[in-house]
Structure formats: C-alpha cells, structure tokens
Length: 94
Picture 1 (cartoon, rainbow, N blue to C red):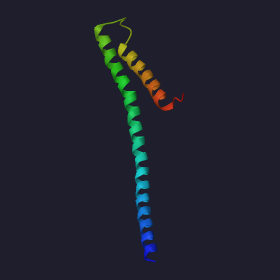
Picture 2 (spheres, helix red, strand yellow; picture 1 turned 180 degrees about the vertical axis):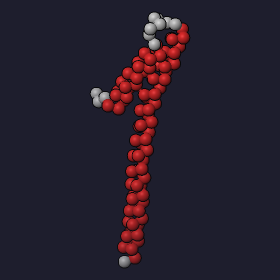
Picture 3 (tube, one colour; picture 1 turned 180 degrees about the horizontal axis):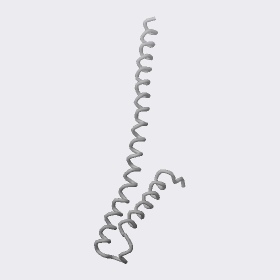
Picture 4 (cartoon, rainbow, N blue to C red; picture 1 turned 120 degrees about the horizontal axis):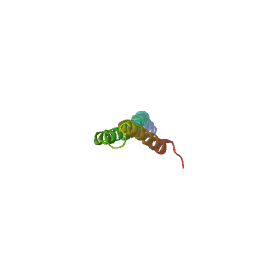
C-alpha cells in the first residue's frame, strides 16, 4: 500500500505542476496579443512619420508647385504603405 500512496502523491504533484503551467500559458497568450498590437502600431506610425519628415524637407526645398503640400502627400503615402504592410503581414494568406 505504501507504493500506491507514493504513486498517488506523485500524480498529485504532476497535476499541480500541469495546472500551474496551463495558467501561465494562458497569460502568455495575453502578452502575445499585446506585442501584436505594438507591432501594428509601429508598422503604422513609422511610415507616416518618415513620410512627414520627407514631405517637410521637400516643402522647405521648394520642390514642385507651391499649391502642393508635400508634407500631407507624403504622410498619406506613408499611410497607404502602412496599411499594405499590415495587411501583408497579418491578413494575407498565399
């Protein structure tokens, strides 16, 4: 009977370890989602900021007609690039 008691105690310890591991895996899913949202944020913000700087540079240089705002144009181009990159990385299934 002593052998059965040790076996039961061992099974309880393994069950405790497994439940602890499952709890942490569930928490890991939350952090994966947080990281995904952060990655999408960087994928959207970075092209738009770069577009803003390039457009501001072109506006100061006086490139093209004065009626064109290169800052807004390049920010919009950055927005389209950002949308395409988010779609390509997260939603495109070849």
